[in-house]
Length: 308
Image (cartoon, rainbow, N blue to C red; front, side, top):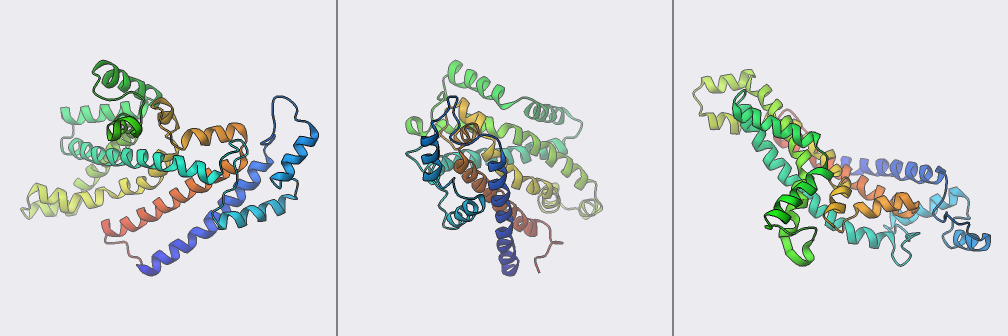
């Protein structure tokens, strides 16, 4: 197990190297630049800006300089937020997005698996039809519709939850609505995935054998069915975690959450090269680490998988 972890961690280095390299050159090949404005910038000012940020150097030298900074985890200054570095902006917004993302994913997994189990065990009954209908709604209805509807019902009509506020004024209560909103499509997908996987495992020979031995239904489900049925769900959790953090920009805008989503979008609009690169690196790290954790969990859920 230890050797496997070491190999996997070392394999992350070339993966991240390729991501950084491709992102660096693709961004600079795009038309425009970080100092492009609606009005023409005087040539002298433009040259001073280019020199200040080393953008007057050959592209290869810029790349090597940036690569050395990344190794030291210095993601450089922001071209547009001049009073802040990229590290400052990420350190301010990423913990908020991570808190919202982790909470939303936990809600999605817990309720998604629970609804999937109930739907599979009550196949073709009213519980199954209700669960499938909720899953279809969760996948079909976009977040910018779900969020305002929840605000209208629970914040404006019932007045039991705060409207568009974060921890600064209402503590943990403020995370409920944005977390539910963000988790809804992932909950729906996990519910459908776990339902389909459970139905497949329930029809397998070893489950029929366990029931023929006289084991309790709760024992059959808990010890024999769930482990095999949860494998597709665990596979989905890696990209889901990355997506739920990256894709929180709509929810952050609706609920005024001070996360990393909006700065990331603004950096793309403003061609803030260093902030774009910083966000790409951070999101790539989240994705590869999440996939590593998923691979480790696979070994505990499926005895056929070994790490020798």
